[in-house]
Amino acid sequence: MVGLDRNEQGNPDHITSRGYGIGQYTLFHHPPRAEEVETLMLDPVRNVQRAVSELNEKLENFVNGPTPGRQADDRLAEFGRGELRRCRFEASDPRFMTDCVRCAGEARVDIGPTTPLHPRTTETLQPTRYHRETSYAGVPDRAKLGCDWPYAVRRYNGSGVNSYHYQYQVLQRLTRPPLTA
Image (cartoon, helix red, strand yellow):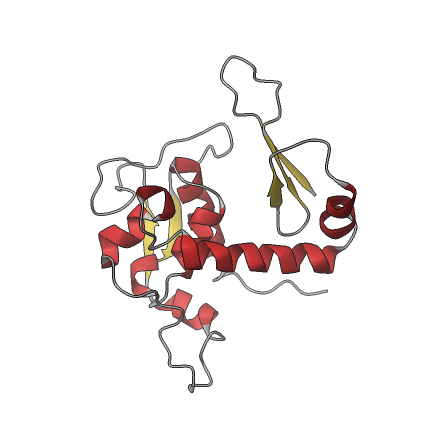
């Protein structure tokens, strides 16, 4: 699976980044180096491992960081600069980092075209060239999940309105029934 972004104004055919494989790990250069072909394109396990590592990097360094470029404005608006929250449950609890589906199903919100992206903005969900939607129904409420992973998921996809679309879609997937063979 390859996702292509074309974000250069005035040059709509220029590919500015590519997301590869299951984890959609992004490369901002072309052509890929030989080791990237091996680890990202040909080996799905390593692709997912790289995506997991990247998501953890986003949690650790792009949710509650020291500068605006290393912060998630939605998290700061909803929780301030407090300590990162990996899970609502203590590490000794068997539900620690394993009960996301139940947590996601506890409180849901509908996101509409007039819903602010977070409490400190008037910006709303706008359609983009990548996401035509202006509403999402039954999205797990990120502010009530008790962890900071939804903010890391959004930052995994950068910032701006596209990252909110991405965040809402990922959160919705947490509440869908599992696929069966």
